[in-house]
Image (cartoon, rainbow, N blue to C red):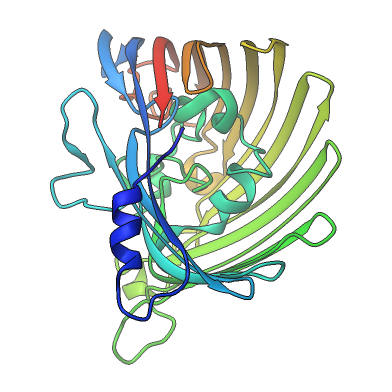
Length: 366
């Protein structure tokens, strides 16, 4: 799945006084497919889409062994559209997915600096926790969204796209992240993103914390993140997220449950979301997953609510390549008639309280 760029590593080794071994690895994911949306802005839509089950990403990772268990490390990663070749979100998005450099110590942990995933993603979404069904089978369509645009998240394409920031779509610039090694199943993390605002240490900043515990087939995790935005009270208010969940593996069945809470600290708008699901491996190359979500806003969001069911079948053509079929259905309610139309994450909003998506896709990794 990964190709080592021996030539680059060898060139680096020729630098004077460099005595430790180092490596640079090119990696990537590519996801393509066709999707049918029952109602998108008032009409059905049959379209080619990429970056749905997983984002299409290419990147470079590097490690230098300093000896004594110490290492330097870095990662540069970019997202792009396979169908158009364009960068996401735009032409100036080089390495916007992640760009960091840091130090690590065996059996202690690591510290990294740069643009990085926040700890909602690190401790609830990515391994070892994997508490969000979006990671294992649901993809972008399973990340939280619904009739909650009034949540008003700045720098967000819909105001509520991946509103609990668990799916890795939100990164933190100018950040310092510390993550411990795993001690008897326990791992801890903390993050601080500098606001770089003259005269204020707290304006426009980000703070985050995470913890997870895994032993045998059981896992549990919790995380917190607050990001302040210039558009909200001149950088003194923001979006506050926290959540926690459990997972359990029973033979070939993987079960997950996750709760998240998202608040706009300026307006008081709150959305709570809970999901539960599972992934069953019938044979080494066939997997079926299903997930149920319930999302509800408070009075500031007109008590809008959404329920969503996501299901997916995956056929592993090889260790690198997967063929999959996915079906997603969302239905909604709220206080204001016509103000709670369905809106599955990654699609355009429906003109009714119902929306269905069916998809066939292919994903490969290198």
